[in-house]
Length: 265
Image (spheres, rainbow, N blue to C red):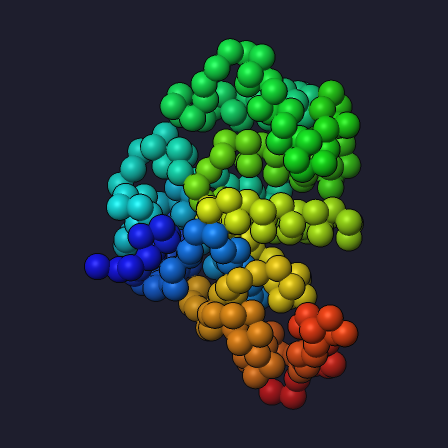
């Protein structure tokens, strides 16, 4: 028996599009409750494919167990009671206010995840907007928001369902520095509530600063995993990205990455 009873365990996972597997017999380290795991790697490494297969948006084969349940054998409704997914791109033509969009996401949850009268549902939706810091946008129309504001609204829609497994695909890509930090702090707080949190990030300094575990991927396979400074070691970054980097510590002993140049391969 695996001792990680509150971990998402993935073994021999194959997933992809049409007749092409992007991931082939992928074996991953445990995704532990209470930790933030960052998936990173070059474009087309398979990071988003992995998230989408966990979310049930792509057909997959293998084993994917969490708290005694194999997610691959659950119905979409059953899986959505455990997992919530925020995609990279957010639709721009939704004719709803921010609060209406969050309420609609809440009502789309399995019935046992939503209880109470309409007023209580509204209060639950508004509470997540306050936690994320966008309560002032509650009555704004989604299609009139900036890209970063829509991304924060999408995060609210993802988090309001109170999932045990939170999947965020490049959640900071359209955000300014303040909102990037806000999202990473929210991810940390959500993990500390006892949930599995998995993010796709291209910003390796955010990964170094905020994650407990990094999984470096390339061409559908795991190159390295572990503590951020180990998984993102200079020799691994050179091999995967083709650049020379240094890992330094700032005055507060927080690691950060300096990219020096393209590598001589």
